[in-house]
Amino acid sequence: MAGALEACYLTRMARVTVEDCLENVDNRFALVLLATRRSRQLLKGATALVEHAKNKAPVLALREIAADKVRFDKNLKEIMAATPAELRAKYGDPVKRNETTQTPPAGAPRFF
Image (cartoon, rainbow, N blue to C red; front, side, top):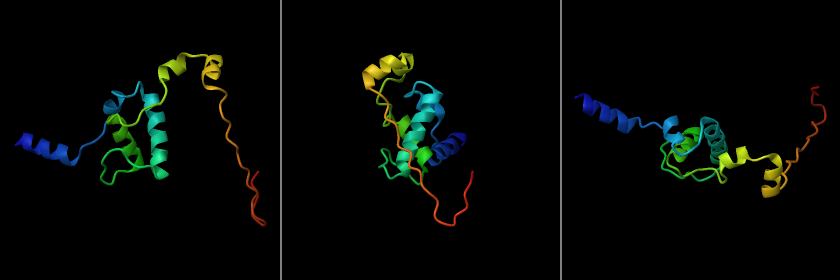
């Protein structure tokens, strides 16, 4: 009886765990970075790479990482071990994002 109940629970409540994801990512910090980036992509309309049933973006991102569908495009250990000069020589200067400053509409309160 307990086996049938456990099987029913597992099929209905299959969960993704951190340990599932850590099989494909080096450490928890890297997992957070990768899951965050993928979640944002999904929220902006990216196509899911695994089947999902009403999962929110963070859970879906973790499912994709656990299924080894999403990974870093560069070797993270190699990048962390390199000096800034070596990284600059290999990948070039980082691209700076342009911060657009918006002026408040006329009559809007100003915050200092």
